[in-house]
Image (cartoon, rainbow, N blue to C red; front, side, top):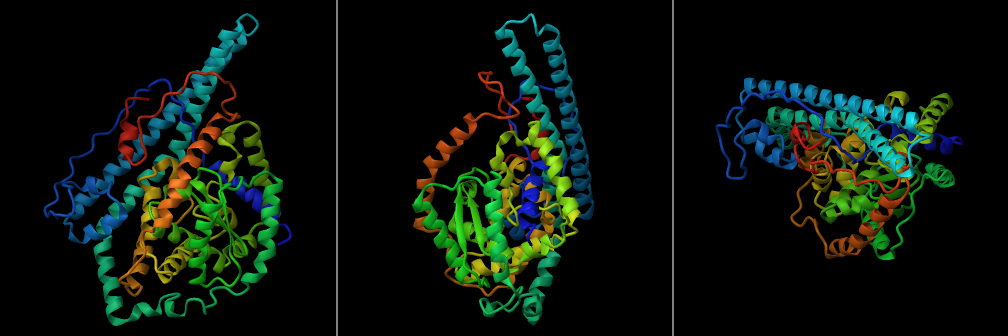
Amino acid sequence: MKDFGRSLTAQVLSLLLLFGLCVSRSEPIPQQQPQRPAPAVRRKMSPADNCRTLHCYLNKSYVDLFELSPHLEFSPSEIAAEKRALQEGRASCIGEFKARAKQYNDKMQQEQKQLKLVSAKVGNAQRHNLHCDIQNYRAQKTEAALLAGHGIPTAYDNMEAKLQLIQEWPAERRKILAEIQDGSYNNRRWGDTKDIGFREIAPGQEKDIKAGQDAIKEMKMRGLMPHELDNKDIDNYVDNVAQRVAQHSDLHVPLHVTVLDTKEINAFALPGGYLFVERGLLDAADDESELAGVLGHEIGHVVARHSHKLMRRATFADIFMQSAELAAIIATGGVASIGMAYALEYGFNGLGLLLDLKLLGVSREYELEADQLGIQYAWNSGYDPTGFIRFSDKMATKVGYARGMSWFRTHPPFYERMVDGEREIMFLPKKSDYLMQTSEFEQMKKTLAPISAKSDKEQKDKPSLLMPEKGCPAPQIASYKPGEPIDKVCASKAW
């Protein structure tokens, strides 16, 4: 573990290969959408929903679909037709944004040639305008390429998972109910929920404390650790919720909680009980049970010693190559233009498992393990255990593909994760007084609002490697808004 700091640094940076977000757009680029076959009308309506087509249901939340899908009646041919439509839409949308990236790149190169030709002749005002055009096209090219490579595939993965849920959940639900009826559910992994706190999920938690301390020191030294939030009330609130969950978990080492002042929607755990919550996650959570579910998930990573298991699989050569490649990206601007704080966007062992899973040969099973343990810990603490499911659904749907893409691209498939979580909730003994919301949470949100507004403004005004020219016209904002279907992004005429 002596090379843990160097290894962690390389892995923290590796996420920058996967994530980038720029919002400047200037010129519309023509696009074409394939005609979607008219979906069949659902034959059985429920008072609880307002959809009349199969495609409409793909924009509903997973929580709603768990309730509604057992009552839906779509034929195999209707399911197959919708699946083909999604595949055609995915290919068309990705192709569209690849074409946009190429056209933006061509326009950027034309402006660069023009700048080179007239560099000695143009005045400062003309030079400034050319600089603005070049950096806008560069930002648009970067965004279009990232959407084509990550954001759009993730959005379609999400819809295909919901289609799979509509098709397969009714049978899966019947199987779960049968296991509850005959008691076989008690034989599942970690089914001994009455013994939480007395179980040993993975021996040796205390051995990870030094590794966690070394990782924090290394990250701070290299400038990879965002600043802490300077508000004791918020710090104390988050710590109180985390400690409550920890006291009802299998954690056997002290829990140290830090709130970081970044807008990213994330929490992450370092080895040995060091848990970091980013401001953006507090902004995104709608109630205390969602926050508790996320914190439980992170505590699950610590309890199962996932960091320790992952680090044993990395080699120095692997780490060196990642570091070299990412250093080049950072030096040239690349996706690091949003700021070094984004290095922790989906943090180590956090909501977004940072490690290159193919490189390290690691199974996504670790995330499913942390989900199961986290749901158990939130439930054992008295919280509504659906909090984590609702927050996960928000990451996939309400927050939009841009923020959620890196998280879900490195995690278990949507369907598997959502169904496994719902299964665990159904297996847990029901309680009549689940805690979902508190006045303390609502007060935290009120205290946080002006802090977030101020921090976001300061971050926006900071220099950027990708956008170095100041005083340029404000870039056009995309017509897409978080929560809208991906169809609207691909069909938008406002770009």
